[in-house]
Amino acid sequence: MATAPTLDDYRKQAGGLSYRNQAFIAGRYVPAASGKTFDCVSPIDGKVLTAVAACEAEDVDRAVAAARAAFEKGAWANAAPARRKQVLRRFAELILKHKDELALLETLDMGKPIRYSASVDIPGAANAIAWYAEAIDKLYDEIAPTDPSALALITREPVGVVAAVVPWNFPLLMASWKLGPALAAGNSVILKPAEQSPLTALRVAELGLEAGLPEGVFNVLPGFGETAGQALGRHMGVDCVAFTGSTEVGKYFLKYAAESNMKTVSLECGGKSPNIVLADAPDLDAAAKAAAFGIFFNQGEVCNAASRLLVDASIKDAFLEKVMAVGARLQPGNPLDPKTHMGAMVDRAQTARVLDYIDQGRADGAELRMGGKQALADSGGCYIEPTVFDKVDNRMRIAQEEIFGPVLSTIAFKAPEEALRIANDTIYGLAAAVWTRDISTAHRMARALRAGVVWVNTYDAGEITTPFGGYKQSGFGRDRSLHAIDKYTQLKTTWINLAR
Ligand code: NAP
Ligand code: MG
Image 1 (cartoon, rainbow, N blue to C red):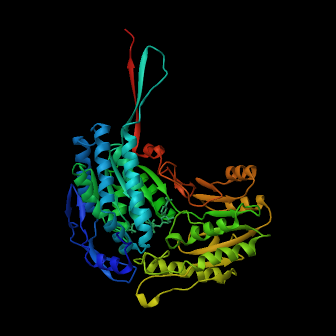
Image 2 (cartoon, rainbow, N blue to C red):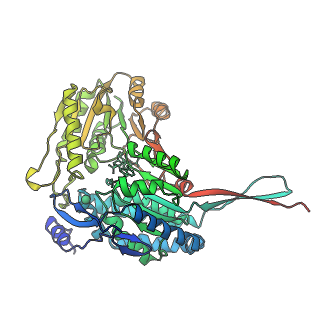
Image 3 (spheres, rainbow, N blue to C red):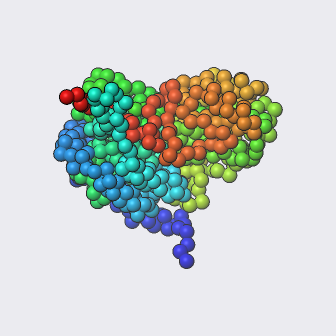
């Protein structure tokens, strides 16, 4: 019987890995036109994994030209949906076939525990691509109910060249939520991974080609946001930007579009999600476990992290004890150890940012109840203890700003109305949760919460079948579900005069 891999097994495998580190344009790996590279550092131990092509405007020009040429040639855009299905299904299968290698690349690159890259990120990415592959030959167009003297067809067409710009917290998964619908709809795609986490995107580029994507249909440009990202955002030949990342950078893309060609932009941005626990929650142990995983999963580097815990004052102290008991078991460890639940922060800059917020919370008068320090200093990597603040006021910076780290802010309330007011008192609106056994309270609060996703008696549940995205400054447009296809298609009306 095969035994589950151990830390030593993963270390050995990691030692034998080779890295794809060049841009992928028109079906080939190529260096950046400038010849420049940047170091891809592992936050596990601070070591350089490889030097990656630092793409800039000239590379963006080349990739856009390749993507446009492929689109116009039509081998993909005009292929029968059943054909696109076949290729994308094969792409998803190849991702699964290389699951172990891709999971290892993701973990080495950005520090998440191997147990999650192997069970969540990579299978999730394959599933997203397979799901849109399966969907695309089941979507029908429309005929409008016009006067009978006309026949009006309403058809969906791919937008053309799509730039997908993604963050580092779920590198391949966030990319796949865009690749799946964009490619299925017949577009050409240029993917820009975050500079902190380019390795899986670069590896799957060749798997796409192997699966049968024509050259130029799927391109990957590693590089920095200010150069490669901005050049994509401002390019006259890019028709659509699908962005996941911070609210600050999301706003730049609106500006880039306004100052260039009015390309469409969809934005999946930050969050400061409230997790509201009422005194009548059905199972406080389950709620506490969800509250802890909601903020400590993926080191808190989760856009919909349960970063604000709103608890009824009558149960707050007892509930927080339960949350901290779960948190105490989630101490950071080597991400390559399959037993580790909390891994490394993505890099030194993010580590410093999170530690600054912890200082800020203390300075503002919140009570630090757990953690608050860096961990595993000898490793050379970036680790932070699970951290819990109590007595947080919603006006404090730690309650208003996205920390993107394992830092929980606890706020007590006296009545559900007060909880709702606090919950909605934020610029963000990505997700929210309510714990109650009263079904009308649940519905009433779910309706009043200004967020793209509301969970009742659970946290962070979801599938590719359900839309995901934000209200307010968490952005607009939705990933996942058939609704995501709207972002990558435009509607054409063809009006045919039938009168003789
Ligand atoms: P980020 O700094 O906004 O970066 C996201 C992407 O934009 C990266 O590829 C980045 O490139 C690029 N970029 C940065 N500056 C740019 C500029 N001036 N012009 C054009 N592109 C630019 O976000 P992050 O730090 O990677 O990720 C964390 C953020 O993502 C958090 O705010 C989180 O909430 C959000 N997020 C949202 C969702 C969601 O679905 N709503 C999901 C996951 C994450 P470089 O990094 O290479 O510079
Ligand atoms: Mg890295």
